[in-house]
Image 1: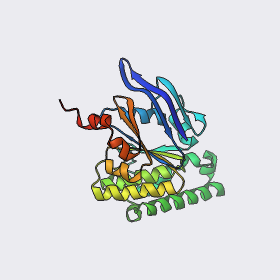
Image 2: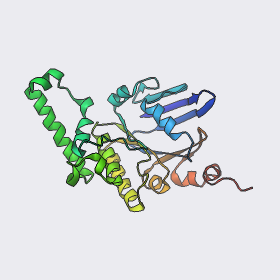
Image 3: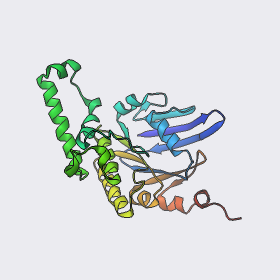
Image 4: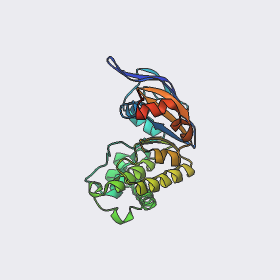
Length: 251
């Protein structure tokens, strides 16, 4: 589904990501973990088109995307959430999910101006699908509320609903449970598993090891821009290099 080959990203003399090889298999949940400053966000930005690698190649669903703009990658079927929540705060919950479907729309500007049946039918379909997603993420009671007024956990769920509204093949989740308590994290993990069961592939970038343990089939560990370990959650958390990266080395 997603393949990174020898991917590097340098900012002048600073090498943020160096020689990363990674494979995200279809219909699996892959984890990417690492301490602060490891290069995780830089890497996901290169995957999603917000940035581009200095060297190496990235292939998504058979398409080279390492030089592609973000909107083209989205149209190919990739969606993402952000470490720092990026909702349209003044728009309602429902409007946030509806607007995410714009890339799938077929109605033209003229269709919209003259309100022809195709445009009205498309609007109805988008609203119904948005309401289904809102119900799925238990946001029905607040669907008419401004997104910015929601509690933090609800905003995270709204981000996931909005990502699903694009009908993606792959979703990149950048620290999706940051700021959540253990109960909220476990419940969100159950929703991630439900998304996988629906046939969607996920790449989860996270600090919370309980979530990684709950949902991930395979894990990559990044430190100082390089992959230092791969394997199951249990295997990587017992790896001495991973323990040193997170906890330091005893003198």
